[in-house]
Figure 1 (cartoon, rainbow over the protein chains, first blue to last red):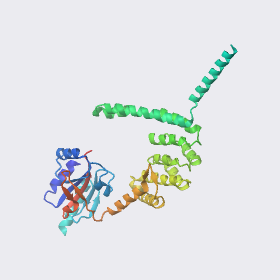
Figure 2: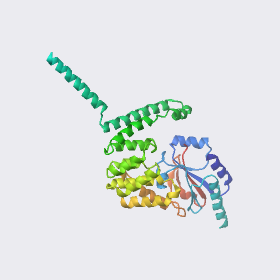
Figure 3: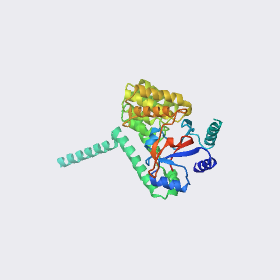
Figure 4: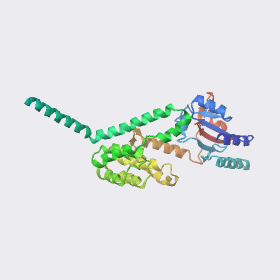
Amino acid sequence: MYPHERSLVARMKDKPFTILGVNSDPAVRYKKAIKENNITWPSFWDGGKTGGPIATEWAVRGWPTIYILDAKGVIRYKNARGKAMDEAVDALLKEMEAE
Amino acid sequence: MKALLMLLTLTAAVTIASAQTETKASPEEAIKSIIATHQEAMTAFMEKVRALPREKQSEFYQAEYPKTDKTLESLNTIVDANPKNPVILDAITWIARNTRGSGLDAEDFVNLQKNHLDSEKLCDVVMSFAYLQTPEAIAFLTTTSEKSKSRQVRGSALYALATGMKRDKSKAKEHESLIKKIIGDYPDLTVGGRNVAQALKVEKEATEKLAIGNPAPEILGKGVDGKEMKLSDYKGKIVVLDFWGDW
């Protein structure tokens, strides 16, 4: 999943786009993961455990869980991964460009 | 001489009697001891797994996982011999959990329904059936949820049904109506000491709030460096919100 996300970020480099993580790892592990996997996008740190406050409010029961939001902050897709994530992002970008 | 003989006879009688109590342990004691023996084997096995280097753990785990067949056989003998005794419910719970239901037969379900439908102890049994997903288990849970005289048992059976179908997308509608029923009819339902009806309600409200087409709720949080961040900082951008962990 990291390679896919890295390539998506690279492809969207000049577009209004970001991956925003909510990370549930203990701090040490999280820092190590960022370094080892070349994660350049920001993440909230959810307190070091899976039952953290953000994951709880967002009713997250499985990891990873993905929500894709449009530029207005509206939830548009849930759990679109891989190719489906690319397509979702492309569709939202097209929508923005049409407006 | 006569006294000595009598004493000998007495001793013999006592010895026989105590030997009999040993072999004729009560069903309750027998079930406890059989389950404990298996648990000891499991604990010893897990210790061995942990002592191995990581790369060898998986192979050892597959090859040496403690077998359940002897435990199952001993438990089944007691279950079959004591159909009306409520203590067999512990044995049935164990069998359901440790054999994914393959150790249960149709007779067990008939017997549970006939002799134990109203027993509060059936709560544990129905929860152990949640993931079996066999037609017999589902039929039993459905009947129990309708016919048990115990409210707690009826609620638990509904919760077990809902839990079992949660991941099955084709049953989403059915799942939704079960959850509604649990929240509405059994708001005080506790399973394993936890108020599950309340938890389901919170989860349902969150899911509704987070439906596609709704505005994303604000997230106020911090990065791992302690710097404050919020979701609305990214308005104007398409956001892939990714709940992740490195595991």
